[in-house]
Length: 195
Image (tube, rainbow, N blue to C red; front, side):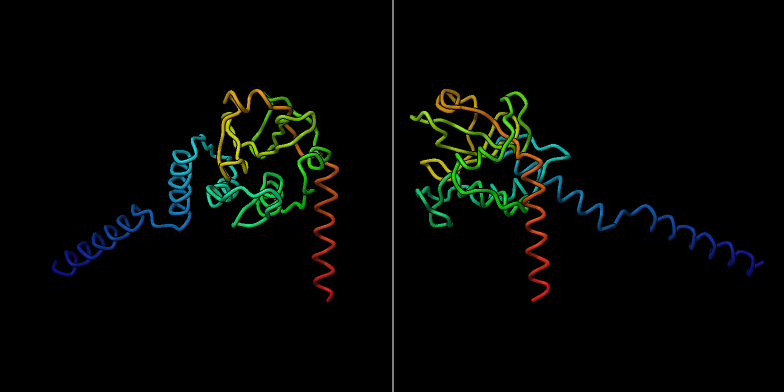
């Protein structure tokens, strides 16, 4: 009888420990999802942009890291940067695409998009005190865009009176340029591998 009671107690102990092991979620995937959720909530609050499940976190981290960088016409570094250099750097780091340097040249690479059709990562162009495109930024969603302004790298609203008055068009990089830039990058990587 003692052996039977001992066997039952041992079986119950094993079953209880298995039940506890199964009920404790301790996977890396769960932790990563939780961290992404916290990062999205944090960046949403700081940037004033609602991040969705499909939001490009690399884009928002890049913008967050550059916020406050001083404006410097012709600048291309953390010491000072202008709008087109900021856009070029963002596209290089976030999308692995090497776009042109000036806002007008960048506009030549896009398919125009209306303000209501803008998507996260699209470009926004302005004609500020000029008949020509003089400013570019990156659309983040919810009417907000990131850009290097006279106040430095910042997030602004397209609905702001100033930017609303000078808004020209949105733009989405043309597929032909994406293909060309991607192929060019692949060729360069292959050349590097062969050296």
